[in-house]
Image 1 (cartoon, rainbow, N blue to C red):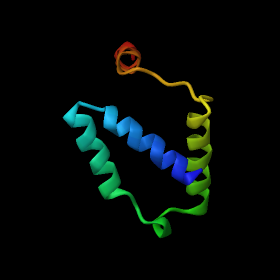
Image 2 (cartoon, helix red, strand yellow):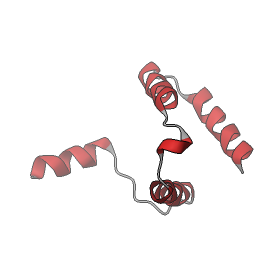
Image 3 (cartoon, one colour):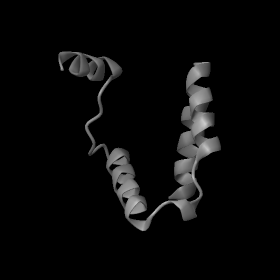
Image 4 (cartoon, rainbow, N blue to C red):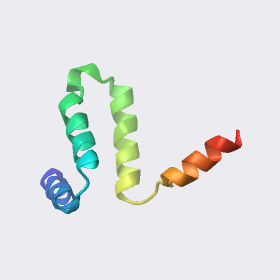
Length: 73
């Protein structure tokens, strides 16, 4: 599974042409916390959310949807 995920991410990265997106991804990868700094509870929650995202069980919102919702408040 891990190698499949890596290959999928590599394929997606190769399709990205916007430099800002690539810089943001690089920033995330450069700043990722070490495994020891994440509690077991947080790690479990992250894995649950990751699985939901990978299986499309998560509702995603566009930036416009988020912005419009925030502007209503």
